[in-house]
Length: 156
Image (cartoon, rainbow, N blue to C red):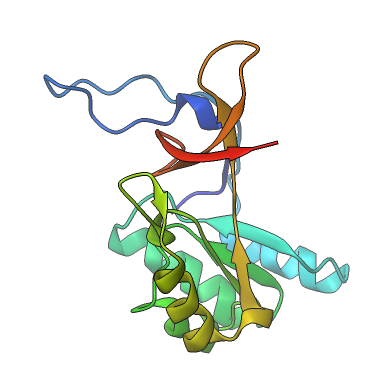
């Protein structure tokens, strides 16, 4: 439930044996997500986003509170799929951001993307194609599941 700027490549699920890699952050705010939503709204800065990296109840509570307090200001992503996308829009998100839910076994699933588009409308859907290199100096590939799994989709 905290606002953080993380170093995405350091985010990881538990490794085998139950040990997590250390998450590196550039910034951890003491203010709530609603505080930042208010700043974005009062300054007319639209297109800001929050990515929910945890599915816990507190993260959901504070994220949805920020969306409701300042509707149509923030985009939301992280765990968004066809089942819950509409509820984020209903709570005030301007757009929903998806990556992992439209991939399966590293392959883009156009049927999932089309379903999401029909649920929320293409004008309120953001397809995030975050990329990483598999090896230094190599090609960029889309990464899913909190930037941990490489998809087969190469970005040139």
